[in-house]
Structure formats: structure tokens, C-alpha cells
Length: 385
Image (cartoon, rainbow, N blue to C red; front, side):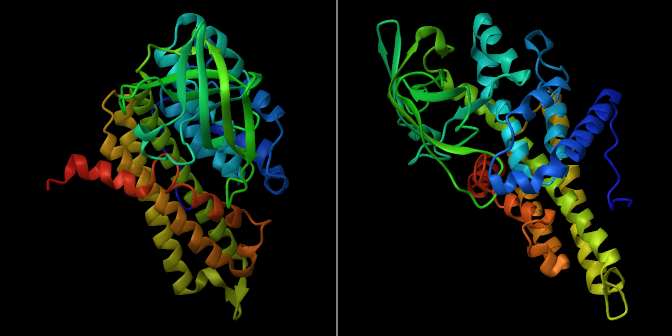
């Protein structure tokens, strides 16, 4: 069946080919198992190696460290396309290295880059990022986990919350406090999972993104050597702000990708489902609902692509990224809601893709900075008070 929206036009043939690789992986290696993995609340670790072998994990990362190369558009297209597998949780789990590795690449030494990056991009290791704490979310300046200098390194004490891939990550990029200044007192460290004092306090049960493991982590006087500190003391906030822009735009791409899948599923159902002697797609109320869903989805995709082009050109605008993230996230929520409504009872079954995506979509206005935080960023740039 022809989808409502045409595929984006890629000026770069390599990007177009990569999009097809991602879509094929979603159709063949994720979609057939999506329901099973959602119910199990975990997907096989072997999927990382499969994704690594065809260059999905390395998208946008330097070839010198095992990456596939390409600009920032490549991991964004991966986020957009892999949603077609019908479970955003798998996409989030496979993509956790996309926020865990950038601080290492931005601030790390050559030895650190060679040590930590290639095994993750090949799928041998899993990496996670630990920022959020039980009492600290978007307010990064409130981070309380502390790294205290000691002979040969640091001792880390604290807790982290809502960590994607945290339950089985081989190492975690941890933001910890090395000074009292709210921003200049933050530093990144790599903590391997086998370090004494590190533990997974609990795996978290979630409304959506069920196939991704999400954990609360405990750091009980965990010793890390100095060579595990990423960058100089006090450089963590700088790296984190750089990270946020890519993370938020990736979530925005997941948003319009989610909306597009839900839109196409709703259209397919409306063309097949009959009521009162005809397909329900022939009823004006359904046609108009689909038209509105298509309009919002197309607008979100165009906004995201426009903002992404600026990011790739080195002209990233934090406020416009916030706009894109908010608009795409709410579009995903609204379009998935309408898709469930069109499928009616079938849309309420857990085995149905739009039901899963409707739950997954609810995370998008929260993750990477809530809608309210995004609005505050937008207001700071565009609204004079």
C-alpha cells in the first residue's frame, strides 16, 4: 500500500541507501519480534552485534573509531526509520550509545576513544549515559552524585535514575560533581559495570518503551582511576549541552517517524474495515481525521529536517531544536491517539502496533527535557519580557 506521505528526498545518495538499510532492518529484524520483546520487556543482546555489523550503530561516528562515518543526519534517519519496527523501546535501547559516547569523543584522550568507542560501535559492548537522579531531572545544575579525589583516582557516591540500557550496560558515562559550582563543578567519568560498589538498584517498569531496559543505578563508594575521567575537571556541563542538541533532535525524528507509522496503519485499516456497507475510509469524518493527521505529520517532518540541516551546517539553534522536539513529540501523541481511535477496539489490543506506539509516544514530551523546559528555552531566545 502506498503511504500517505512520500519519502523524504535525500540529496546524498549514501543517506538514501542508509535509510533503506534501516527500514529493512526494522522490517526484518525488529517488526516480527516486536510484540514478544515488548511483553518480555527486553530485546536480545545479540541485536546490538547485528546492528553493528551493518553499520547502524556507527552512523555518524568517525571511521577512525569503528564508525560508519556520515554527518549528523545519519543517526537521525536511523531514529526515524527504525521506529517502523513498531517498538520505540528497541530503538531507544539500540541508540543509548548515541548519548553515552559523544562526551568521550568530545573531551576524551585518544587512548580513551580507542578504548571505549570501537567495542560499542561493533555491538560488542553496550554503553549508557547517567545524568538524571532521583531528585534531579532537567535541572542538571542540581546533580548531587559526587566524585571525590583519592590516591590514583576518584571515589564516586550517589544514585542515577531513568537510565536507558542501565541494567545491562558494560560501561556508563556518569556525570558527577567534582566542585560546588552548579555548572563548572561537573565532570564526566566512565564507570565499568564490574567495579566494586556499582549496582543496578532496580529495573524500572514503564508505560511505554517497554523493550528497552531502564534502571536506577547506585554508586556506593565506587573507585575509578584517573584515566576514567573524561576531560578536565569541570568540563562536564559543556559536553552535556553539546549532547542535548543531538539527543533532542533524535527524539524529534522519532516523533515524526512514530506519527508516520501510526498514520499509515490507520489508513490501511480504514481502507479495509467496513461499516454500514462500505469502507470506513469513505466516511468524511474518517477522511478528514486522516487528512489532519497527515498534515501534522508532514509539518513535523519538514520542521525537523529544516532544523537538522542547520545542525549539520554548524548552525545549530537550541531554541529551534526545542521547537522541533516539542512539535514532533506532541504530533506523535496526537496522531497515535487518532490512529487508536480509527482502529477502535483493535487499536486497544497490545498486539497492535498503534497501541504500542501510542504508549511509546507519551515519553517523547518528557525525555531529553520536558515540554515545559523546551518552552523555557524557546522563550529565552524569542520572547522578550
